[in-house]
Length: 370
Image (cartoon, rainbow, N blue to C red; front, side, top):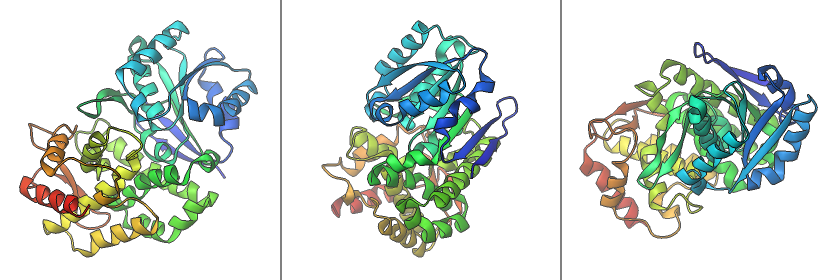
């Protein structure tokens, strides 16, 4: 029942294995990459309580020992303090350039650990074992690693491809409904940006995914990874097409900064809200029909997701402050903010030709509806 997606970057190729029970087989998958039978694992408190013993047993079955660093859970861990702690711990463990570091967790742990591996001894190998849906379909694939700054999300980092990704579908069963749906925000993004047939499949299969259907979950993760891998192979360091993967993220990152990168707005929730805003902006600019944002919003509503600014609890800054936060986005080029907009579902593109007044008017309207 395992599926494999190959990321064919020359000299940095790796496989993404997707299926049930993979965590218990980690030793079998990782063993061929090891020169010595020992790995260092970085994880967080929540994931460690649920999955660290299974990983330990899976490694031990192949005679592989390990040490683990357990960090606090949450987006606030993606900072300089915990990066330094991770790097110093890995150095204390005498990690060599031929060793592998294992990231066991969601996007926060994967991004932080990957960045630590990228800068440790000028680059050591690492393996992604993503334990959230969001990480399985997005952050574990493509080699983006990094931490957040108070000025913006993911502004500090490096491109560093993993040696292997193990996406165990069984671990998704331990997610809360909210965390699963946050990951679904990234899944449905792929349909919106480049595959209307996948979006239609999700409209039909989304409830089965949320209910725990294993086959549907495998298919959704596989298709998401295929789409990301295809784009990454064309544009590894985001000089062009890879920016399409940021559909909804310009709004999302500003909203995350405005809410303090906390539990008020999970990343995938911000992506869903951001995608709805991006399609609404596209319609207002005459790029697509109003039917498209309406269809996007309807599906997100049917899945029980956050869709509008009014769905975000607590106060939000005014439209001008949100626009200033967007100005810190990584997609800014020569001071010009780039948006990912759409000519329809599955037809996204990157543009800097977006009047600031139109964006501001949309934000003012959305904020006034709160």
